[in-house]
Length: 320
Image (cartoon, rainbow, N blue to C red):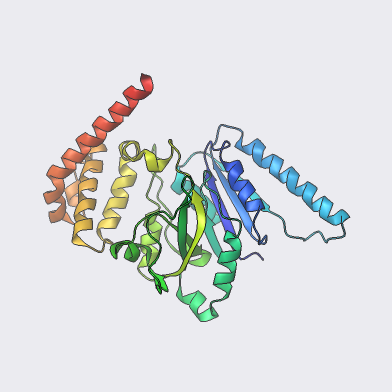
């Protein structure tokens, strides 16, 4: 059985996911699976995947004609369609269908270096069985598509392992690629689904795992990131406005897991603003950090107005 599953949540990304597919076809190590979770796309994502299935069949037939056995590795694609639930809902579905030891998410607008899978497999298999049980997986580097440079900072030389939150607490910067053990990711609670909303911070699961496990550091690039103008990273104010219950849930969780007073106070500010957006009058009573939440109310109100103004401005720009 393959060691690694790469899964890709996709929502109306037929114009970019082809690049993801091509990069996986170029991998120097082929024994892995690709799971696509189509989160309610209305474009031609389904038809595109069907064409890849046909291409894989042609490739297998050609290999047979050349004398190779039917089980010669090729890109093994598993496609699942579901009604739109947001990125976190697609992650829930992906985790339900994983069967390999490791898993890694690649967004549908990103792609991977040609030797990314080989790097992961060789690095993981070089660890003793004891270490493979001791760590939650691997943390590697992201590269920016435009400049082909490492996003943020590389890991300090000699760093063997870290938690995700601990890395940032110690001054780390930039997005990092996470490769998790499937058994551990499945042991953590699922992301909650809030009716009418489609966003809960993915760090919810990662912070839970941080409490018990570290990640082995692989100081090499595992993904090439292409931030889209309509992606979640570039529209956070809209995410805050449209998904206040999801954000309130995540902020309450983060309050009890943040490592510094400064971060907890920042989280409380965001919690106040999300609570105002979803008109929750009981937010102080529900907060795990009540006093800090009370102190954060003035700044939380200011953030609320900033978010509201920004979203209205974006709507006007679209209409104009």
